[in-house]
Length: 210
Length: 210
DNA sequence: GCTTTTCCTAACCAATTGGTTAACTGGCGT
DNA sequence: ACGCCAGTTAACCAATTGGTTAGGAAAAGC
Image 1: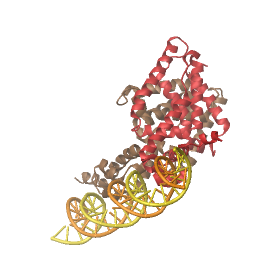
Image 2: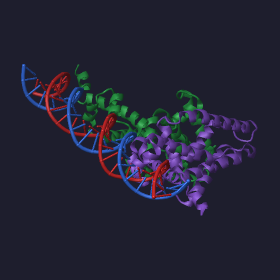
Image 3: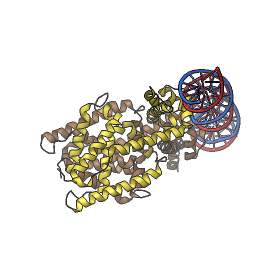
Image 4: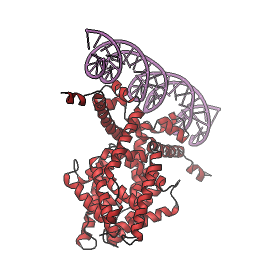
C-alpha cells in the first residue's frame, strides 16, 4: 500500500509530536502563566521527556510563540467576517453567534489571548497595532453607514464592538467563575444556545434592531 | 509636640513600607504574573532591598495573598450594593456607573482578579463559592421580581449580571488593547462618562427600560 | 545491507530565585 | 547613659529551571 506509506512519510512523527506539545503547552501556559509553566511541566503533560520538547522547539519562548500564533490563527478563522450586504441585524447576530461558539469551543484560546493583553501584550504588539486597529476601523465605518442610513440606532460603533467582544469572550475567560456561580461542573449543550439568544436579544435591542 | 509624636509612633514606618511593597507588588504581579514577578523585582520597584521585603512579608505567597485581599476589599467597597427600593432603571444605571468608574480608577485590581479567574481561581475558591454565588442569587432574585412585576423586560437575570460585569471590566482588563485600537496613550476624562453613557443606554434598552 | 538522517534521552551545567542568617544601625523610653 | 527592639542589609544557600551535549536507537533512503 503505497498510499498508506505516503501518509506515514517523513515529518509525520514530527507533526504529531508538535501538536502534542502545543496542546500541552497551551494548557500549561493558561494554568500557570508564561513564567510559571516549566518546560518540564509541559513535557509531563505531553508525556514526553523534557529534552524531546527542546528538540522540537529549541526555546521555551519559541513554544509560547507557536502557541500564540496557532491561537490567533484559529481565532481569526473561526470568527469570519461581517458581511455588509446582509444588513445590520443579520450581521450582528452572526457575529455574536460566531464569537460565543468560539468561546465555548476554544476557551483556552481566549484565555491565552486575554492574559497576553492584560499583561501588556508584549508578545503581539504589532499584531494589535496593525491588523486589529484596521479591522475595527473598517467595521466601525460599516456600522456608521448603517446608522447614517437609519438602519440602526445611533450608538458608538467602536464601543459596540467592544461590547460584543467583552460579553462573548467573558464565557471563555471567566469560565471558572461562571461555572462556580451556576454551580456546575462544566457547560452543557443548551448553554451555548441560551447565551447566543440572550446576547443577541440584548444587543440587538440596544441597537434598535428588535 | 506630643501630637506629632503620636502620628509618628511605632508602626508608622511599618505601615508605610507595607503600602509601598503592596503597590509595587500589585504592579509586578499584573505585569509578570505570579511566578514571573520575583521578590527582587518587587524590591526594585519599591526601592527597598530584597531582604527588607521578606522582613515584612515572610513569603512571596504572603505578598500575593495580601495583594489579593486588598484588591477584593477595595472592589467590594467601590461597587456598593443594589438598592431594591429605587426600581430597576436607577439600580442598573447606578451599578453600571460604579463598575465603570472602578474599572477606570483601579484597572490593576480588575486585572489581578481577572488573571486569578482565568488561571482557575486557585487562590480564592472559597470566596467565589460562598460569597459571590450568594450575591448573584440575591440580585437575580431581585431582578426576577421586577420582571414578574412587569417593571422590566423578561431577560435572564444571571446572564444580565454577567453582561454588566464583562462589559464594564473590559475597559480595565483590556486597557492595552482598547488604547491601541483608539490610538491613545491613556484614557481621558471624557472616556469614563462616554462609556457610562454608552453601556447604560445599551443595557437599559436591552432590558426594556429606555 | 549500508548509510544517512531523523528522533530520542540521560547526564550535566550555569543562572536565577526564594528564603535564611547574623550582624549592624538608630531611635525611644527610663 | 544605657538597654531594647524595630528596622536594615550583605552574604549565603539549596532548589529549581532553561538549555546543552553527546551518544544511542529507529527510520528512511539507496
